[in-house]
Image (cartoon, rainbow, N blue to C red; front, side, top):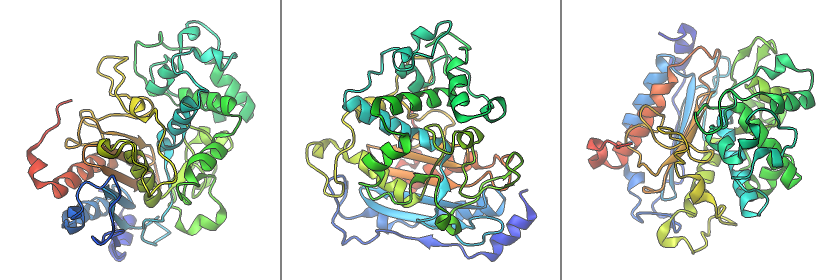
Length: 407
């Protein structure tokens, strides 16, 4: 049914439809698949209706959907940033990306370290973190951490169990395994926290400094950072009325463990905009465009990591697991929907965010919502993300509407 106050607020709000980079006069880069820009002639009204309907029924207070195909973009903002923040969201609105941090930041940093010869994914974790000791822990590799097959439990309430950031990190390293490494896929924030420590030790830089210096700033992703400044507050979507911090969160990371780690971690903590995430997706696609793989893309100052291809391939360490390295791949019931190609890769965030990239279509789909506003008990966003992905492909390629991916 949704919150009546929210529905009333949304009905009073003018839906913002933003079309960015839509002129066919724009010269497509090497990744563009069709110089006639068919996406810019697409009738997006069904997508508009789908998102607006979800907002009215209370699935999310607002949403920004970003689409890039061959470098041509559409960005659609609907609803409001928050119940007491009736500003409509747009391409520069900043959302708590939650676990998108794991791929936009942590996985990218690991790829860079692999390319620089600083990391070997098949070396035992304890060789990088000697304090990671215990039964069967000598068998855990970085590849296990990236595929969530390490045997570590999913989560611990570090903000309640420890008294400081150093103690929390030490406690994660001491956490015993639930299972033997490589026999079960269990999505684990603890594994991402450990991998963050590895990355920071081998590079000598904290993860926020590393990614800002090596990726975000050079790509012009100026809305992407940990711990956003107070000057951004008016364009940051709020998340939850948090009982632990006794306030509505806006600009403070939603994830409690990330907050306990000073707001900077590889498992959560990153904030960003739809425009920036499209730039990031286009950058990755520039390194996967087979006909132009050896041609520098003029849109970007440097190519993506050379190890990218190996990171987006499903690893098959555990039967039926859809996990690549850091990234996920399409599977039944996932936020990828049923239309994206099997070679697609993406991820979701607890706050209601997702990114999916389809190399066969040169397509990036970004969905940013704050579905946890004002409470995380709202779970109506999950089918919305799947429906958005399917509808976008159907609208871009009507003939594909009868296509069903075989996992």
